Length: 110
Image (cartoon, rainbow, N blue to C red; front, top):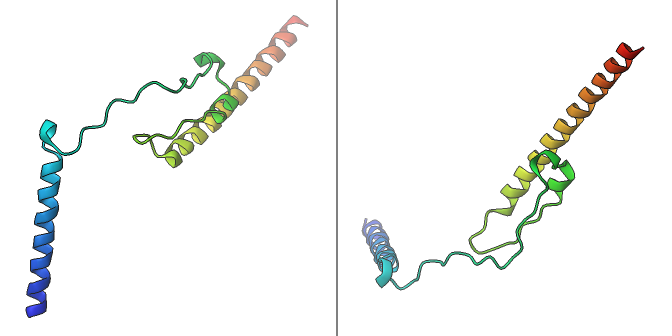
């Protein structure tokens, strides 16, 4: 019984200490930690072609710089992979439709 009470006291004390430090660190302008500054545009922007000219390879070639406040690279890679597949599918459908139109135009001209 005594060990359980001691464990509870230690947990409560730990929570109070962590809460105290969290309160000190997040007190705004009087806090111990300054808020993160806005990132400086020191890297060149990620450039893509115009929307109607984007190809799947353009998306596959995108690389983002890693930063302290950046996104999770695995999530970004997953999204880029899905976009690449979607654009490949779109381009394939457009190509098939263009071939169908050309065949129909060729048949009507004969």
